[in-house]
Image 1 (tube, one colour):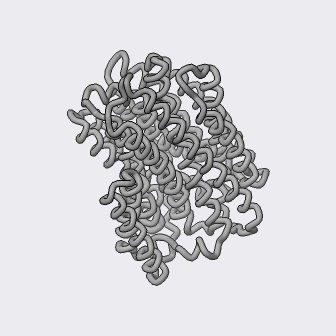
Image 2: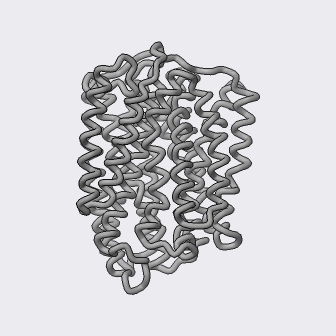
Image 3: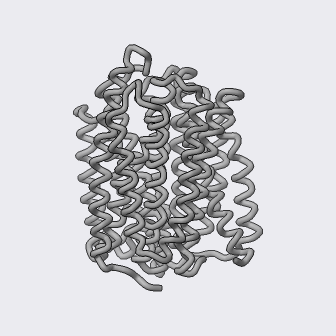
Length: 459
């Protein structure tokens, strides 16, 4: 492998490392932050949800901008601003400030997530894309893994604020490598005008739908949900008639493989992401495990996932990606089928084994589904395609957390998770995991249908 390719993979993996590092660190540190800022269960849920809400809202607009002005340029600006918002998070003095800083960090993350896969797919030949995507996602997972460990140890021995400060040197390294080692830029879109109205409608649509969904069945939240659906219809109508749309909606109608792969990704991530957050709370509240031990357990489980994700990426270069993705969903489904029955006496060994299965399933799902999406469209749309599949991941993860907030509100009523509410917490856990299992089966059906679609684009 040439030195330029190695630097490219290092930059891509490094950019994908910092966001999950902070997310997983916060997953472990959330109870401590909740105590310091006197946050209730719903507020703690929004500490995680705010980041994913912002990232999912702005992914597609930044993907389109990258197609026009350059993939590397948008990626680099995202890393630079990420440095600033991480510092702001570390200096927060209230829960409102921290949640706001996390929301702004999510906007920066959209610039990174929306371009990292495109940076690889435009730089690597088709027979190396799966492996490159696997390495990128491995960087993402190493961020999660080390974040779990750092979240436990830094929170225990120093402060949760140091979780954010630990990412600053990595940001600087990535920017330095880009400026010194990656001179080439990619801006392949033939249509250079910006669809600002479409971008605005996209942001408003996702904000309204996710906010509305997270607070059902409150009447005002139903209004937000209906408003989001109305904006969605307006967005589709506008995109069908504008010359240079932010999203070519005809792709979803004309390219069955592209549409099914994106929908399968959306539902899969909705069904699987929040499981880690819930199990972190379960181990700390119900089983009274030390935050360092919980961080270590989550780190080791995620490292197993990181090992498999690189392998599955390379495997998808040789075997039909949708078959590998379907195998991953089956593994995840087996794990999710176990969790609706857990209680305060369930063996920790079984919990950890099921957690490892949950993450292993994700390892075999992610690289192949991304490769399937990018293989189904032409090169000039790779930044938009990359941002779309990443939007599906982040919207799915946001909806996953929204489901948690919804059931926490129903079962716990917005109270803190204290011993007298542990039974209600466990009841909510069982119902949430049951819903996740059903959603996972739906994503399996969609992934199987991809193989029957026959749509693919060859460079």
